[in-house]
Image 1 (cartoon, rainbow, N blue to C red):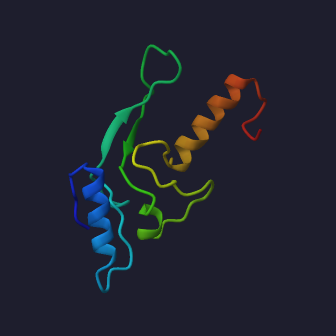
Image 2 (cartoon, rainbow, N blue to C red; image 1 turned 180 degrees about the horizontal axis):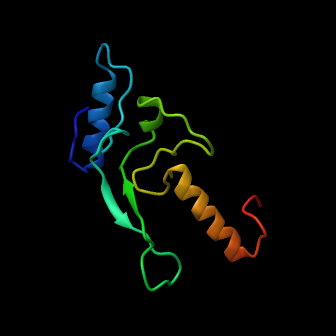
Length: 115
């Protein structure tokens, strides 16, 4: 695991291509940190137009579409990230996904979040 701070997309793709071409290299993910790492970018959450943030924070890890396979992660639902050069998707830990699903269902007037 090597943390690489450069955000230049062309250089990052070139680096990934060169690393994956090296003998013995099985997987490469250009990411901020490994899944179990304590290195996180933390942010608060505020739903709708609430005056206050929720009483919990979200820890974020920047990653690419190779993160799941490189770290052998198992998704309990959904699909992997699509290749992209900008942030268009995210994964969520089970608890935050359930809370978000509940809030969306409630706002839509559904009786439960299974719709």
